[in-house]
Length: 58
Image 1: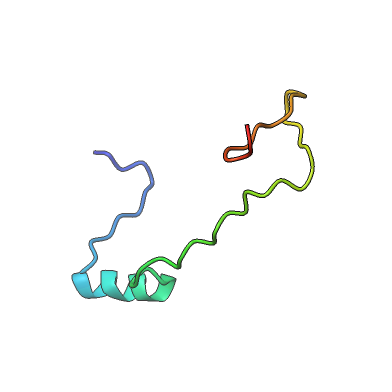
Image 2: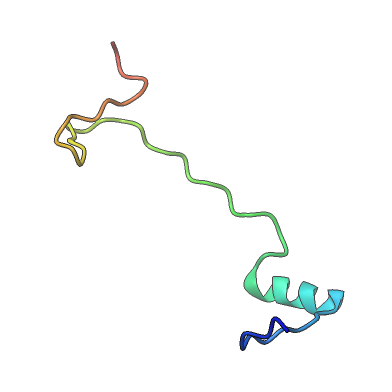
């Protein structure tokens, strides 16, 4: 009775494994890039105030 035009399927574990392999989800995620926290120039945020960066000399 909940048929709202949606197509539903039941996948076997083999189909799920094949799909994960096809989209690249069968291994660990790629390593994240290190963020660069160096300030090159003063930066203003969307509200017109200057952005305070963590780790700069206080």
